[in-house]
Figure 1 (tube, helix red, strand yellow):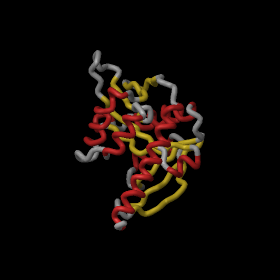
Figure 2: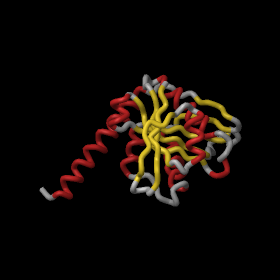
Figure 3: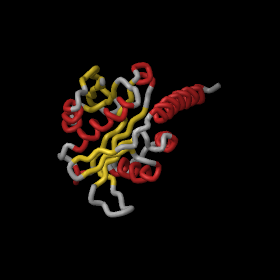
Figure 4: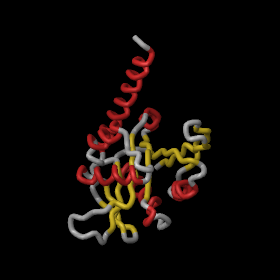
Length: 193
């Protein structure tokens, strides 16, 4: 078997395990409550919110969207591992999402009974108001209630706002490393409940 094919098979197995772990976690999440913060409502996304969540992710990544794998993962979980922030003032069925916080379970998290924050993003017009900090607080409640022992995340050291938000919510630096793909130092951080 050619080496490239072997590498693809290993990659698919790893993705499949991550998908299964995240799917089983999503089944433990029963809370559908919301939290209010300033002029925003924070809640677990539902299936109808996913296109808007995916669009916000792409908008904050210069048009580069989530991979097909991640989209499938979040669809299978019915959005139960995505927290979305909406304006309290949106009328009727019009719901603009101003921020998203996306989670999944990787191997390390499965071993440590934690969940990994894969992405948190806030639209420019909602930045600087503490929204990301409040979303992490809401996520802590949701995942604690689901029986997890904490949340992990990876943040670039030069992302001052995200580092500040994570530290406010009790995340501690566990590991500092140089990420060659991004060309910068990053921190693996963890919050324990």
